[in-house]
Image (cartoon, rainbow, N blue to C red):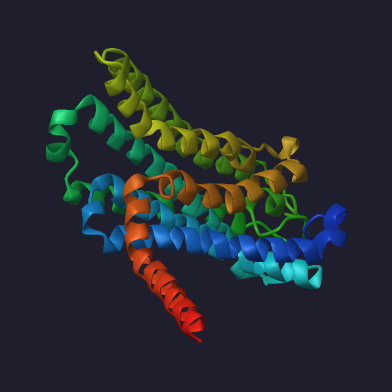
Length: 324
């Protein structure tokens, strides 16, 4: 099928209603990219450098930080070009590579959130056996399994879309290459591919969301059986960050992936793409890390010598001025 295609590249045109804001959006997204990569990079570095954080929960947070960096690094280059030049030209094969990478990282995050829910389940419902169950070896195996499932899951859908004939037009009204706007450009009937896209995406989303709901139902039942309010408060605080991020993540995945061709809306795609390329990576280090006492204490200890040196330097300079 793909021998009949006449399109060698796609043109990302963004959304025509916001073209006059491109300069402002470029500056905004540039600073967001710096903040997201720095925030998640600091989280990963702190967990690696602080041996006290070498526990399963922090291993999962470190893996999540890497995924968030991968997501923004995958899509932001074309977003920058689009806002700088008004449109971004992307070769045919690279467009599919970007689409595959973005899907793979999101699906990996999807599975990782389920594993993190299981970790919270063991920590609260099987507290006395937590260290025996959630060993570092099991933790690393589960993280590798998330990556394996994430990297393999989109392959079949990408292969199906790749074989469709693309004979024009080649303009994509989006910020980067994604399956929904790309399928709308195919010259052939893509209903089968839309169905496959829906099936592959919905399977992992529904499976993991049901798993997380069941896990938290069990966690809630366990918390309600606790004798003291202090125990319940600590248990709630243990899983609150993950619960918030899970609700935040799955709330927009519906718009990003589960879209039948007849229901396709560029506005929904724009909202979902901004959600997953801006808000989720931006909130992740804030929710999991910078509100975490152990991570904050480690950062304070590392920054304390710098602050102390600056304070002593100013104090010495003040004494010299007074002597003069």
